[in-house]
Length: 384
Ligand code: FNR
Image (cartoon, rainbow, N blue to C red; front, top):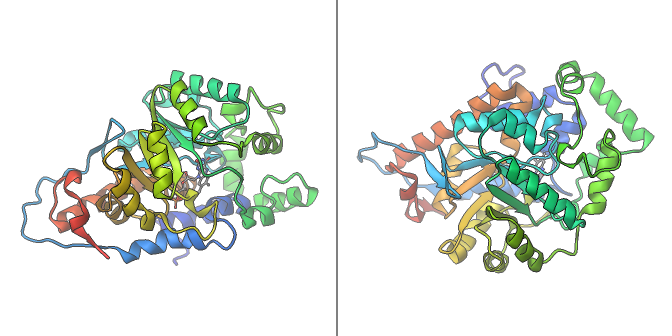
């Protein structure tokens, strides 16, 4: 790849620039997957197994990429996935992500473990967004977070269920990511001093670098390591579908269950009252060797698509991939690494550009497939 990409276009271009910009432990936190990273690779590679059909000589002068995602108008079938610690990758990164999403006309999802709290995002964008939550042991904290999310105008709760325990991301261990050990701290200092632009932008001017949504409940607000420990202790591996039924009773907005990979789980999510299921393996960051999400999507969409909305994430790297997912039954997709890399590399304008490219790619694909509306993209247009 070129040494200096002046006009980045693809997620791979922004990935390259983000790598040059970020300290290694942060870049690899974004980039890595669990264990041998087989699922991480499969998520992207498996898109090549599906082929779109080219149809010619149809009037495609009125292409419309817009659609509705959980009752909300969107410019294309795409939303920004929850990405923890976005504010470590760019100055006040969650706010920038939400602003770019608003400019593009797509939903933004704030992570539980964001740097900017939901009210900061709301104040900066003044438009509705989605909020992601994990089940925490202390249900009062859950109720408090839901109240704050609702007050900040969150319309949809994205409830992540594939984190009963944290996956084994070896690069994070290797790099001393969130390590309290002296050797880990030293390793990070070495990585940071080679990235002065990141230091100036984020470390100095991006404060406070704390988990904003949790600052009132964590014992040691200025210590990210203490936060990490708190969150690890709070992850609740006892969660079952009954807890989702409880959640359904306390959250009045839309509920999306994130991390469903099997048909029986998708049916259980519907039974528990989900408005949407998100076929996701956490971007290959949890169970390594589980199948790619695009290969799991068709069966889940067939099984529950009539009762609930179906979304997918993992490995989407272009508008062409978005069209494939829609053809296989998705109402929409979420992107993780593509948005955070664009933001890390080039800030809000980089993300604006990346989202515009995705939309253009969707539009051009539709034109060359001979369809004018998102609703007309169906399984007849894909083969494998
Ligand atoms: C994530 N993901 C994630 N998911 C979630 O529910 N809560 C979170 O806080 C995070 N944090 C997070 C950080 C980083 C750096 C990454 C890359 C991912 C998972 C994310 O929402 C999504 O499922 C995947 O990123 C989708 O795969 P792609 O688009 O990155 O291939």
